[in-house]
Image (cartoon, rainbow, N blue to C red):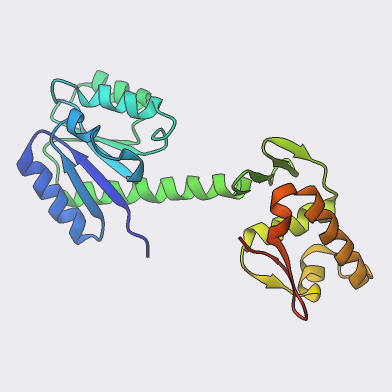
Length: 228
C-alpha cells in the first residue's frame, strides 16, 4: 500500500515532533518545517497533505496557504489548519482560501489522526473521480464524459468502436487482449463481427494516433494491446 506523505508546518518544535511521531505510527511519511519560509524550500508537490499553523512569522500560515493554492502545481494539496486562535474570522478566511479542515489548539492526537484520515479519504475519492473522467498517456488523451480523443490538444476523429478499443487499451497498458476479449468488451454479443473487422479498427487507430500508433502492438497468436 502506498504511503501518504504529510508535511507539518508549525513554529512549535515540540508540537511538530509529537505530530510527526504519532502520524508515523499510523503509517504516514511525515516531514516537518518550522516556518512557511522553510516549507517553501522543500518539494511541496510530493505531499498528500499539509498540516499548517496559522500563527507563524514572518509569513503566516494563511499567506502560505494562499500561495500554495494559487500555484497550479500544488493547488490540489489538501490543507488542515491548526491554530490557537478561535476567531470565527480566521476559520472563514482559512476555508475561503481552500483549507479542507480546521483544528483548534489544544487538540488531542486522536482528533488529529481522525481528521487526517478523513481528509485523505475524501481527497483520494475526488482524485479517483477526476481520473475516471480522463484517460491520458503523455499527450494522447481521452475525455470519457465527452467521448472524444485529443492528440497534442488537437481533436482526433475516432469512430465509436475505435474510441472504445483505445479506451480499453489505455486503461490496461501492457496487457494483451485476444480478439475474443476485445469482442466481448467492445461489441454487443448479438452482433456478428469478423476478426478482420477488429484488424481494420486496429490499423486505423495506429494511423490516427500519430507517434503513439507504434505503441499499439500485435502479439501474433495472442492479440493486441498498448505497450510503452
